[in-house]
Image (cartoon, rainbow, N blue to C red):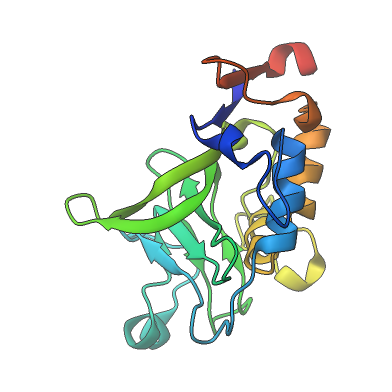
Length: 215
């Protein structure tokens, strides 16, 4: 099993971008934290896309009907800056879903197994699949489902309260919403991924980290 870091063909075009560009994956996340911003979270809360979970751990009840959907195979959000509108697509594990509890207990908690996260520009909806894609992908991290994240679910099968700080899914997504990559990078570091060594060279734009060797 492996974690794949996939850099797009245009990833290297931003080496000299102003006010902040990047040369490798580590630089990219520094740039993300510097650039990512949304004017008003209430106006741009992100969106779930793809099929909804038919059997969520937490039933959002009437709130899901009024304000949802609060589940899907994706959760997406794109920033709003004049310099560089970066966004992200969080993709669930195959056959599974990402969910948000909203007002149901434990309130405002994200949960679900994350398979991949793609960062890019130009978020667009594919009407055929009901899922989003980027007009310009920049970097994708695949295989996050094999590095030991808890999916926001405890040993009893319950959603982990966001306030405990132990819900990996909530921590990663909530921080990305705020332009913070700390939990994601900590998880990658713990898995042995060295982002500073991952840069676009020629056409070899996929870096595979063998988890068996890391372990």
